[in-house]
Length: 268
Image (cartoon, rainbow, N blue to C red; front, side):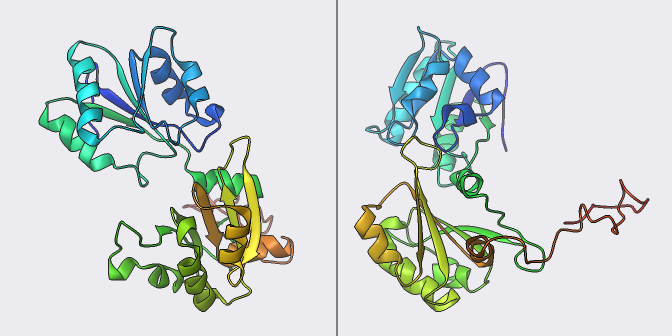
C-alpha cells in the first residue's frame, strides 16, 4: 500500500518521453526536490529542467539497487526532499517492489505519482482506440519472455489467444519469436504497428504485418524502446475508421443516467 508522511520519497512516473507529459503533481515534486534519482537510460534529461538549479540529480543507469537506495536514504536522512524519477508509469516494468521493500526496511515512507505509459502515448500518436464496440473491448499489456521468464499461463501465445488488443513491451529484440506467435494467433497478414520512442523528437512509427515484423524491425534498426501493437482495433485503424459499430455513449437514441433518466454507467 502506498504510504506517505510529511517527507516521503516520491516516485514519479516521467511519462513516455516528452517532459510536458509528466503530471502536474509530478512536476511539482520535481520543482521542490533536493535530490532526483532518475532513470538516465530512459528518461529525457529535459525533464530535469523542472528542477531547481541547486537540486542534485543522479542517473541510476549505472547503479545497482543497493546504490540507488543508499543515495535516496542518505538524502532522506538529512531531511531532503527525494524524488525517484522513472520512465512511463511506475506500475509497469519498473522494478518497483524491491525499491519499496528496501525503503520500508529502513523505515522510510513513500508516495507514488502515476505517469503516462508508452501504450497510451503511442495510441495518441496513432489516433488509435484500443477498445471498439462489437470489435474489441479488452487490452492486454504483456511482453515476450527473455531474460525475465514468463509463467506458462502468461506466455505471449496465451495472451494472443484472447484475440483482443495487445500492447507488447520490451520485446523488439525478440522480433522473430513475437512475429511467429502473432502470425499463428492473428494470421500472417494481420496488421502490426510498432512505435519506437513515443513522444520523443525521434519518434518512429512502423506499420508492418506479422509475417514481415522481424525483417522490418531489423531493416529499420529497431531493437529497443519500442512498443508492438496488434489486435482487432489496430486492424480497424489500418483499414480506416468509419464502417464499424459506433459507441452508444453519444447515440441520440440511447438513454443513460445523464441523458434520458436511466441510472448506471453511460455505456460505450
